[in-house]
Length: 89
Ligand SMILES: [Zn+2]
Image (tube, rainbow, N blue to C red; front, top):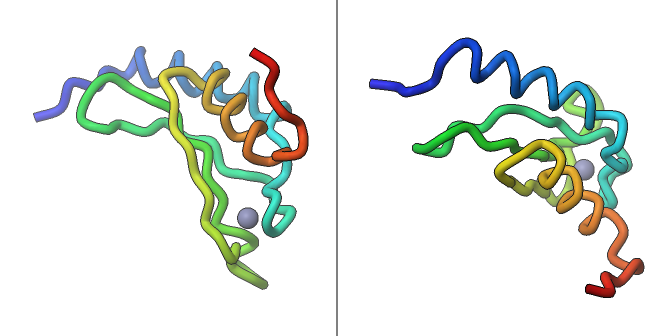
């Protein structure tokens, strides 16, 4: 039913831990985003998303982005978190 393997997930969780501190706060509510493995019907991907501080206030926008690797997911998130920094590639 599922092709996920424990070792695959373990490795992903380890690299998520590494990039977690690199993710910028949510541009809409200032909360730290959630970074988690995301199994989108294929190999594992990584999702960076924000729901806000669920105890006090929900994020008004619920932004999220996904990518093949934690590094590129955070890169994508950070590009959204800082729209004033234009990419020059
Ligand atoms: Zn937010």
